[in-house]
Image (cartoon, rainbow, N blue to C red; front, side, top):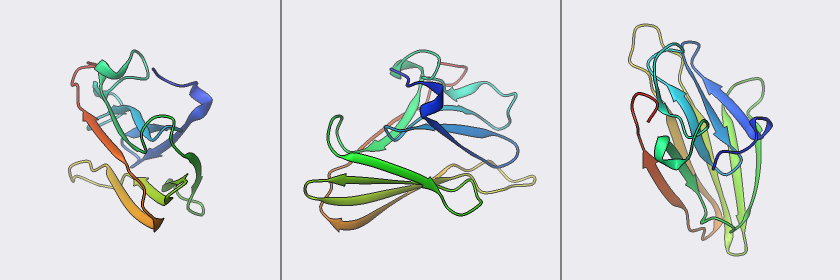
Length: 125
């Protein structure tokens, strides 16, 4: 189930953009451009419409997030009883190159179990 629009952060490469929810899920992304059909569209429906979630299991841990400086590089930090992990999301700027969505997972402290669910659904799912 999609969150409220104010619970999303945006990452982009000046030709397209993705919306990242507080739950670690990318719920909206059109590729290769803004006016292309979405490949992640659960913002408009549900998980069957495509998303990419990297986060601890539902209900585990607390998230905090912030942009790096004055960039669209989003850092989400997950704290659980056993440790801390960070997910860094961004889309590198491109000219004629193919679009890229980068998600880097870092272990900060201890052990954190993370789930990764990738459901690509072209044409708005």
